[in-house]
Length: 544
Image 1 (cartoon, rainbow, N blue to C red):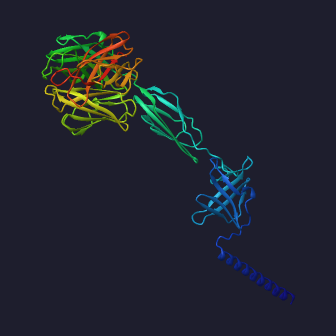
Image 2: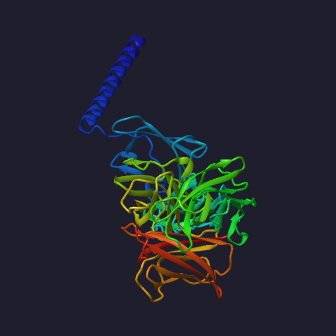
């Protein structure tokens, strides 16, 4: 009987517990229905972990706390709610957060050794930790970009290390014109330069407070390890074969220079040991006789370079004439080209006989007969340097410069070619030489732009490796005196090309020493061979 009574009581107690449990479950369900974010969290994170936590750049990265009974960890782009009790693993608090959508994320949080800091990882309890501070955001100053170079003048193939000297930390973005690599995000990159020239360097620094850019124009100068070049004054116009005066000739390779006349007005100039895969030839008529000079061709003969030159009288007939010749290879700061498609509307010149120290290939367009626009990319603004042109190939013509200007970062040269007898515009091939700066060479250049001035003046686009500006003046109709200060002595040659929208021609009358200066006479003529005032481009270069 007692056993039965005890059994009934036990059954009644079980039934009561079931009833109470059912009521609790119902209450929980009701609360979830009222607010689906209601959280019944067994334990909360210690108060030392709550608050806003900033990274080392002052950005608010973590926000840890509770709203009502909700515990959360805020991290871009959302909120992670903490529904479960955290775990402690060797003083590291492991917390699982659930977002409104997406996957759960696990956070590992611990105190830092520094007061007021904590460490947070999203990797594991032992790795991936970063420090965060609960103080006000770090004041981050806008960056001021700046840098230095280990060397600003190098030879081709050498490297430069750039050191960031900016104020304000941040990310770095470098651009290296002409360099390899051409860009970098490293703080202190090393760059190799393989092509001679002058190159810009740009650094962009960015942080949470802003961005700053520092560009240094022509910051790195790259010189050639050696530039093949030579020149000669070929003054014995009727001699069958001779060696030009050593006082006015030069061969960087040390070989002999010889001139051979095969027939009237036909000459072959050989530079011993100067065979090159890419070279250029310019020529200028010399003396008191009007006429024209043309570079027929040039090529290698064994180890030598041979240039074939033709000279003419004012009526375009072959005639014996003295001339100056200048040859050069790649590696200097500037450009050259052989315009070999005289009737083409637009084209890229023969790459085996063209060069641009800025890297990109020159191009040529021709809108009409005898009218050409040469574009030399990437030479940059600033000093416009010097341009010389000589007619080339078999057409009896002269070549001259109408003008040269900068367009953006490119050089634009307007060239005109005329029949050397009639003076009419005529399609013709030509050689063009551009010297931007007299880098690692001795010489000078100018554009004599005041053709009527009998007073001494300083021409435009003036460059001189000696001290002082080049000057010029007219001494009589079509006759000019050019003075190159502090460049006395032999061992040089002279080139000159007329300038302007006409068919005039220029001749180097001669040059001599005047005290410590170089004195040069230039003659200019119209198409009929009559002395006429004209603008001209002037260039002189000395032995290395």
